[in-house]
Image 1 (cartoon, rainbow, N blue to C red):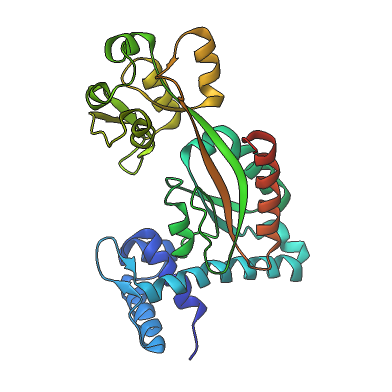
Image 2 (cartoon, helix red, strand yellow; image 1 turned 180 degrees about the vertical axis):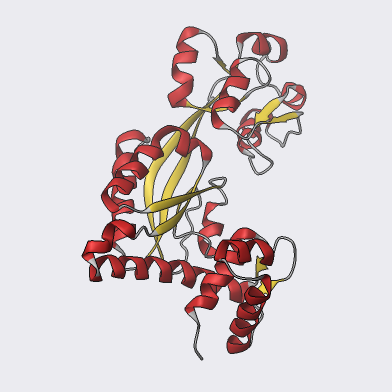
Length: 298
């Protein structure tokens, strides 16, 4: 049984682009040629690798091949850089890294910039909630991730980075209106919250400390870290804000903690493929060093 690298690259393109037509445009071939490559890959394996839906999705067999495709491209690009040193400047390995929005907006970007300068890679930063980031690596659509999931993934290294500290806060006026008697369950049910997206359950988890049960308040959805924090500061609702941003607002009185025990730490990990890759080694070194200097270590 042979696995054609061209078929692997085509599969990855279809999943990334979502349709055969867009993959054809990206690969500069016809949609018919894309379909023929996928059929040939499936025929050689004896298994279906794609669901023909919109968007197209990898089957479990396809997810195994997606992981192989990402690893193959990285190792080939690194090998070409060593074999043809004079062409090194023209070889830009592309590495997909899954990141959560708050890490990217606060501590992570300098680490990625440092790694990029050292390596000359092209980084594809895939934004995903930290609770779900490992799924992207497990599915083969990325080679590394910042994740809150401590569970190991086959074929990957998992290293603790430290904890990102948040504080449950709101504006003084919002607090006076909704939480004058403290964060009671009835108030938590009624007071609007701000959440990043529909995967974001951090506010609900922290509210359980005070309510001692689940809550179901009205929610603003603001899928941008900076604008999320600004919405809380402006009194649209309460939410969990990275302490790095909240500290000055708390000192100036623009924000107040929702109640006692308002701080919340989210342990983060670095998940990366075990490939013998200089690219992944440098990324790991830069990310872990930055995390040690900026995240809560305990």
